[in-house]
Length: 187
Image (cartoon, rainbow, N blue to C red; front, side, top):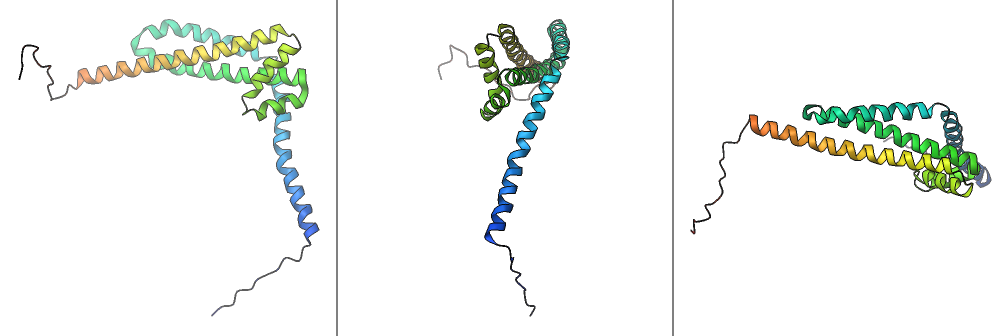
């Protein structure tokens, strides 16, 4: 029968504690560095973000006539869902940038600690406390665009699914016939 060798680690408790502290600091440092990168990135996007939002808004408006055609509602729904995603990401980045500019990294960290979406809330608070009404209006407009396009996409998707179901039922009727009882029939 083979013998199993058990090796003992000869490290001291102080050495193991030092390694543990270094690992813990590395675990904490990675998200903080990512937040610094995200904050710098969000400030960088402020230059071209209005163009992206404008294009997404124009495409969303162009999809309204397309959504009238029942066969195109699925396409319009998908594109509006993508526009909603763009508006939502723009809202988050804009709020992150405004929080970072007004309150620094501490405000960003507090915002991210509020389930990630708290950056929008801290962006609103930063705009309120610094009386940046234009920033507050932009955040409100982006929030409204995000929600409106999301609801429109959901409505069009449900409508497209109803239309598809209606066509399938018409093309492949069931063999079972279900008729309503005659009101005069008292069985």
